[in-house]
Length: 265
Image (cartoon, rainbow, N blue to C red):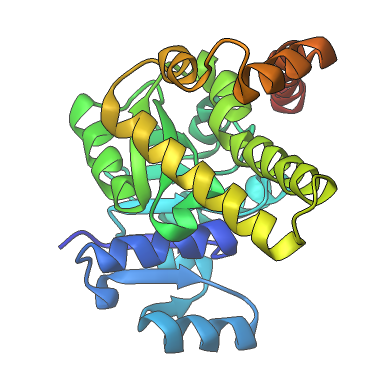
């Protein structure tokens, strides 16, 4: 069984930890670095993992998941660099930190994979975009894809596309929640109580997403099937177009990608 170390176990780190344990990883082969005694005890109680200091966690670990805040990465790497196994694969979910940054701080030859997760991984429906560093083999990338796949779907992209991945799937759940907020508000304005509007909007979103995934049809085609000429859906789409909703959504995704690039720089 692979020995896995987690440097940091915040919301996303613990989400990945829980997912790989559900997928069959032995809890005794997972080590988590956590300084807070209260948090350490919580992780032990919830998952049965070994909780220790960072250097002990990475000692001889085959996979090291770096799940600290981006600004904390340099200090964490400086602390553990001399005890990371040269054969280890380091997986970073620190947003905006390049594989080159990791490779410069770690022993020569250590494989690094950069990953962008999103919050639906909390319910096993996450999306991960992963990119290989300069020394990663195909087998190592596939192993990381399998590991993270316990929390959802995984796509492999060139690292130069990570800003786009961030804009589409990393930030994407917020766009969906924003849409549902407005659907609920519109329902209330049209006369529904908020609880009913929430159920209608939420289940419509889940159902539409499931249909999109399972049908294999293009979203534009599925939209056309619902949009009868002169009907209610056509009236809504026309209002969206008049308000510039489509242009605004595209601009938002591009703005998120641009900001991601700025933060990476």
